[in-house]
Length: 169
Image (cartoon, rainbow, N blue to C red):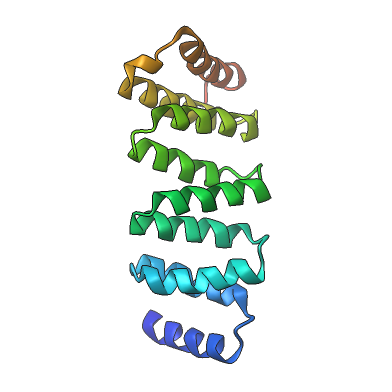
């Protein structure tokens, strides 16, 4: 039973506040239950005790985003990117936040940065990247510049070059 496990974890945390991995797991469960203030209290401690824990920054970004504090959410996602620039998930968080806030130029910039981190040999990822980029271009016609259209085309061409028979859109 999840509730009993959570209660046990909370007791362990009370006995050993340095057990940050467990705090992170409990915080993620709080986020799932939308107990965002409780999650943020734990996550603030997690990143204070281990400022290099990327998962702590990402979870905190998610909690801030769910609370509607996009400034802090973006700040925490950027911190996660700073710590592990090859990890795609923080870029995904940023992209979704920019898209949700109609910050389309920033969303395109985030996609461009993701393209620098993606494995070059996975066509399905490149098709998804193309679809995301194209989605943003369709939301803001002012961004449909020749350079941006060329970038979108380059994502699709790359996908077709590395695996045209295995694509799943």
